[in-house]
Amino acid sequence: MVTQSLGELALGVLRTQVDALRAHEPGTRAGVDPEELHDMRVATRRLRAALRVFVEVLPPEAEALRQEAGWLGRSLATVRDLDVQLAQLQEWRVGLPEPDRAGLDALSNLVSEHRVQARAELLAVLDSERYSQFVASAEHVLQIGSENPSPLLAEAEAPRLIGRPYRKLRKSGDPLDAHSPSAELHALRIRAKRLRYAVEFVTPVYGGPARRFVSRVVGLQDLLGDHQDAHVASDRFSAGSSSGSGSKRCAPMSSHTCSNWKTMSTSRRAGSVNSTASRTVTPGISPTVSTCPSRPANTSRYISCRNSWFRGPQTKCWSPGP
Image (cartoon, rainbow, N blue to C red; front, side):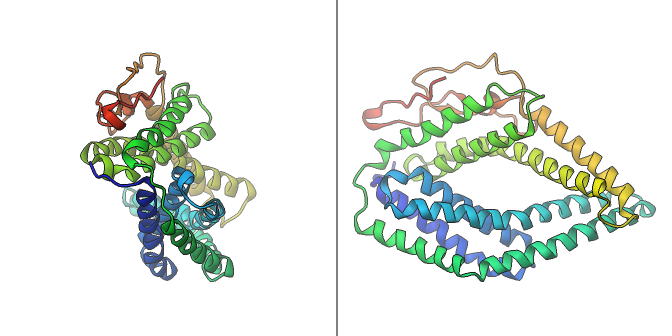
């Protein structure tokens, strides 16, 4: 284990995310590689998550910075959603015979037009005074925090930082089933993401066991992410079909593609959540997850309690509770 104060750990995490955000800004502006925008968005998400996880040891200005990180994340999300949709359309195109590709190409062109507009709006955000102030505020929070870091030991506080998002994830996920609304599945995805980030932030304290735990949470998060992407795309094309937007040549393929996304959404939903009546939680044992990367039946098959690697001071195990 690494011995350091919680303040030092928090500032290190914040510095990493701010640097990553700035490093991927040029690529995001260029718009050539979609992964640059994706990485900038991830850094923004992690920054916002870190500001939430470590709020108790950060200066008061951190809360306003967290709100602005949310604003930036939403600006990046619009273009990212369209990138994901274009990639999925391209994947489907490969499996179609040549005569059937024209309609899908027309649909891809329509999505590309939406992306051009969304990118123009994103560039306006990155060129804005508000964004410049956001970057300056991030540096200001880091500077203030470094002047008087919290002396609390990270090892002593880490179990509490992880336990809170773990319990919230189980509370949100255990009641869900295959008929639960998409909004609840999306909320569960957010819970999984927050737990993942919290554990990643304290990985310097726990090392390998924390990394293995994260790899399992990622499986649940990815499956729920596929569901959300399919749901967003289905809604977009349903709205397009009902409003008559796009060319007539697009309309039949739009209906077919919408059906594909609905099918994908349904399959991911069935894979993500079912009854968790058989779940067993052992008090005093820290969280881990079982191996089922391709088709998780429920939250507990990803997040169960087996190994005691999260320990507080004097080797006291963290108990996630029911």
